[in-house]
Image 1 (cartoon, rainbow over the protein chains, first blue to last red):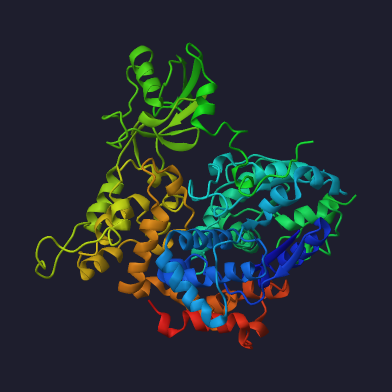
Image 2 (cartoon, rainbow over the protein chains, first blue to last red):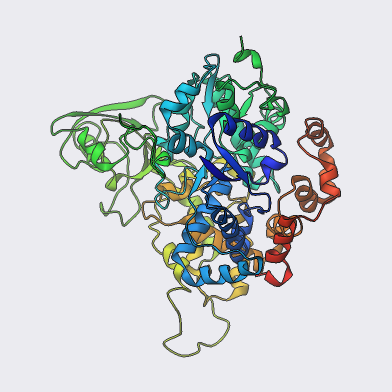
Length: 289
Length: 334
């Protein structure tokens, strides 16, 4: 299986460990990744609001780069995933806009025909690998991990348009955690928002929201968290010191990227998966006896 | 052997069957005469009041509340009027989610609570005052500074696409209760989804006076919306609140009150130059030298290799940066 792979901005900067882990895990899963190095940012939440045309061009360009390779597109960031899904849907709905975008892309010799299949890494595991094969590939069941899944927003909402299950009924991460040998827990924050998208101008929202989520995970017995989104990870892990100061209590909750959790179960070493790059240290002793 | 590899699109639906997430599945779980357990959060006691209710076919949460009021708790306070998804007065939380009591099928075991983020008057009745005062403050009406061009005024459905979605609002406050930023109280000046939808009905109408719209938008704190779509998820009128109300209002704010959109404009500028977001460059652009106040965190991030200042200050030309400049360059400013 071969994918055009779009890491996004976070996985090439603050969460570079996610990019490294994804490449290693993909190799273990038998996925061949063609990284789209010439792709730009998808515009986060900001560009789509203040410059819709610029937003659509950048995202359709990413889809066109994948289509040129004749490959489905794999993403590892929730917000990037929703952005390309939105751009793809609008491209198909609005033929005037589609023509305008393709006219601009023609300067680069690019053209989008609306054919690219978009899949987040989490969905690839279910739709391209399958549960049975994943179970076979697990070499190190992660029995020491009691894990709180943190879905994030943009691969579970908005409702209806992309046929997401009602976010409160999402089970994909917990089911995966079980396949990998972990014990998933239930807690109030699992499909809530981390507040990342206001953090660059005011961190207080993210600190307050995410503090409550980490605390709920801890109270319900989690010794680690896992998220499929590097933006959520930035708040859960990168802001945890500030969250602790705000709450006046130590949380010390290690947070893994989804490919790191999968990689640990597939037998890759914590060093290969760069868990040492996190702000809150993950204790390899919880998975390696 | 049946393959367990899901088809494209199925992974995002995992949980639908397992959690009985369709009306048919929910209805199948109950038969005429079954006993439903309904716990209600009442304001005069810390404990949930528990009731057993005989199920009747097509029973709604409102029917269950009415049965309790008729048979077991005549003093139970709750609101409803039309009973048909129009008046927006009967919203409550059922098992943690905002629903209209008149439009939601009962579940075998359910906890009914009042909406969040509004003062409780009694039991399930909330005070809509904070919402109403905010809407009043925003003055969500049309003002015209110039004479009409004549009747009928040229107005296409495309121009009214977003405003018409906002006009579907029934003012039920489900979104206001679900909004995590409103849940933080006075931490921000965010107006919240429900007031923004009310404002969107006229602010997104192309006939409205731009100065008037700018004045209203300046009072919204709109860039404190975290884009979590929780408001959309609970909206009984299926209004795309984020994508067709809040984001178009953000676009108007960026054009009419640019100081409020400093962060968004900074991100656009960073992508236009680099093609991607360099977090350090973005923070410096948004906060300027004030970013240095958080020096300890910067050092921690630097120590872990989370930020790379060489990359920030010695930027290279790349195909991505060329694309950023090509598509977000000045000639493309909306």
